[in-house]
Length: 81
Image (tube, rainbow, N blue to C red; front, side):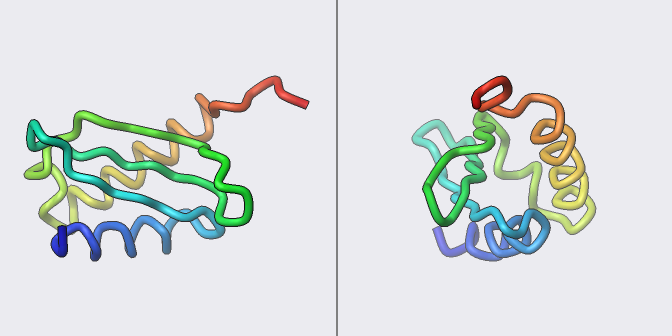
């Protein structure tokens, strides 16, 4: 779990003001959840990522780019008032 702390910190830094939760699943994959600190409202959940795919600085930068795309193009609350 400790190895996920730097990833979480990097994602929170990149997606401020959103908070981030990273969790390791039983099958060895990673789930990332970006949510609003004040309300807990979830903006994006991505799961099934290989932990090995986010070990290098380049792979983390690529993940951030992909999450930005997903967050911008597939918000969970699109169309809500």
